Length: 410
Image (tube, rainbow, N blue to C red; front, side, top):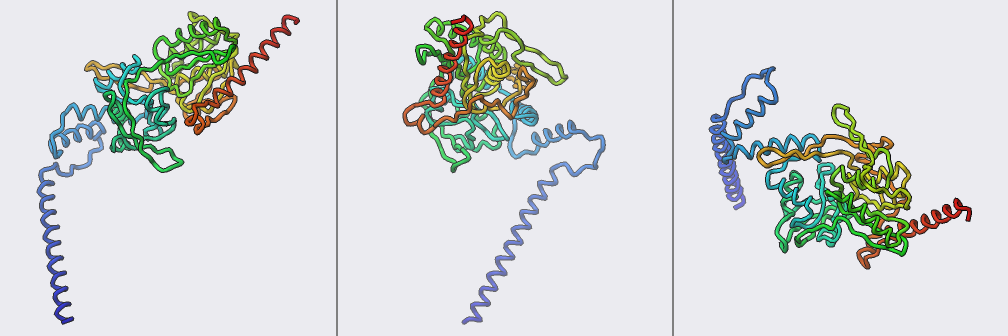
């Protein structure tokens, strides 16, 4: 019986091997038939350029790709690829994406309320916007979004990610978050109609005025100017300007906000490819308040225009920075509309603080480092960074009062 069983097993193996060889030959024959349809390997040409290669790849995609591909899709992909290749801040926007970006600067769109960027080729949250679903869901600056509704973001463009996260009010989106110090986890967030209150004010004590600036959109400079005047009329003898989780915005508005607290001088210098340097100075049309004590709250979510203001205040020793090191975005983007309604966001310059510091990938360090107590903030809404700023401002007001009395001989 054992001999018969061994012969049977040997026969089965022979049949299996024979079938495998026949299958492999059939597949190879089919591949060979397809290969014969493709252009054969050409002779190498030393005059063959990347532009020639681009044309050849376009030809192959249009004629041999397994499905029909629209010519416009290939061109948009090529443009997007070119921009993504140079840096993570340059990208292509379709007409609909460009329209969405314009709506965002108007302060009104449907989504979850977070600002994102590409850092080390990873989709990274710059900051959640205050009082939005993203902030309430506990998203933090530095969180990496690895998937959106199950779609991995590893090869996804920034604009595609924005498009997936936006949507009608009341609908849900699920983000997979990598926070580094723990296992990746999912967060389900319900979209809302996001209307950002860009400038908010409050008297924190009888003598301390507080201004929260969410983003540098058009006219925020004059709004901050008005806010300081209003707070002073209410008795403010010191100002706390909160730029935490402010991702930036318009360069000229960063100059205008700085001009509220500086009397004169360079706010920022912008250097372009050809070494052309554009010096942006204090806007003399802004009514400055150069004497009132100033504290700026910053954190990892403070980027771009926020860093321009913080850098100017720090370099002129005009006020005190409290919080944690800023994001570190020291490059300037220009949005260039194209004739078909699409647009390109292109990195066109680097910016430097008044002392000539290039803060890209480094950020601006605070004068007083205070880490936010996240657990306490989630439990009872307390804000130890703001509390420290209030304590520091009370000391600054006391010192200023003492100096004024001494100067007056009292």
